Image 1 (cartoon, one colour):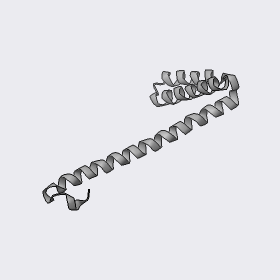
Image 2: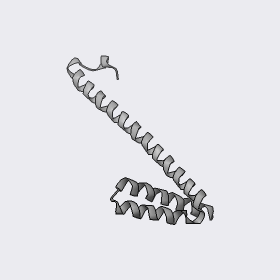
Image 3: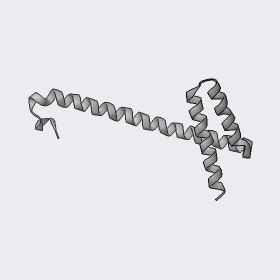
Length: 96
């Protein structure tokens, strides 16, 4: 739909909707990019921990989760819970 198809008295409303749509698209694309970066970070941390600690990697990640909880650091707690899950996922996958 072009502006030519919209009656003049509706143009301000159309502009508002267009602005809202553009804003939602921008926020969504940024959120998706941030989510992808976070997943890459989780995978990288899990791989590093597995490489350095072998079978103890999951236990170490769980210990870091406990430390983060004691410090009331919600972001670190979530990150390391995700790292521990990734380690467990990789371990289960390797046992198949």
